[in-house]
Length: 328
Image 1 (cartoon, helix red, strand yellow):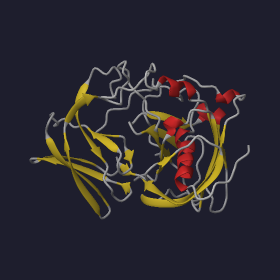
Image 2 (image 1 turned 90 degrees about the vertical axis):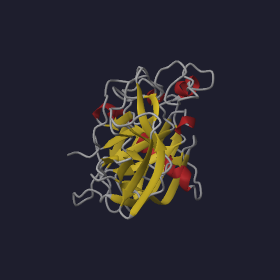
Image 3 (image 1 turned 90 degrees about the horizontal axis):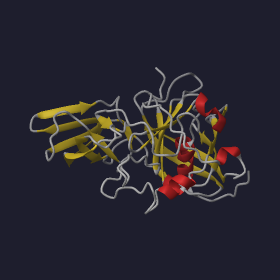
Image 4 (image 1 turned 180 degrees about the vertical axis):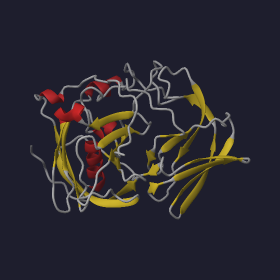
């Protein structure tokens, strides 16, 4: 592969890195680039990791449409409370689109990264999402469709209560060609292997996992010293997906509710993905919960269209639930 060197492209690099890790997963039984994904599992908060400014959805039996609630995000010494009103919307946990559920949709405020408790209160009624169930992570980086070598200094993100490291990437709706990626973390000797990586999107859909079913589209190289293991990932074409979701396309998104298409089918949005890695250090310990930073290094190249891996696939499969990235 040939790469050109770019100077000081921090956001673009991080983006690609996340793309590598977030997008870089199975291309077989449960991988895929289409919208026929298994529905997210019902939960009190969806998704379970989010960055500041990203909306999360809270669902509770006490909700009634129109109610005003106060929602507090709390971790370490940071505590921020925001108001929210219950709305009735179709729930993605029912892919038929027939079920409307009262829900609070709240944007994560600027708060310290890491495990975060969410407390919702209204007129003496309250409920709590424990920090073991929700993590604030680093803001995403915007991806671009081009070849190059990139390095981003001091990329900062959140580590969950179980030691899972999260990275997010945005702008992937504009990456339609097949791409090749190589990613490593400098100054952060994280070791990971088969089955240690899971990917969701910002809606809570399970997108992929680097496991035996995707072994034909990624490789992990062992490393030593202060550099993490190295991931090579080959992402197939998304050209059909991109075309279908254009204005007037067969999967044009409903402007009134962007979780759905105009034809009333559920929309799986690949524009912002969250990559979770359950790695460990050389002494066997997991990363400490809280915030962490490292230097991201990425090589990216537009794929060879003659390669068999570049062909767009429609393999949606039946993996309906996102397992914890951290092995118990």
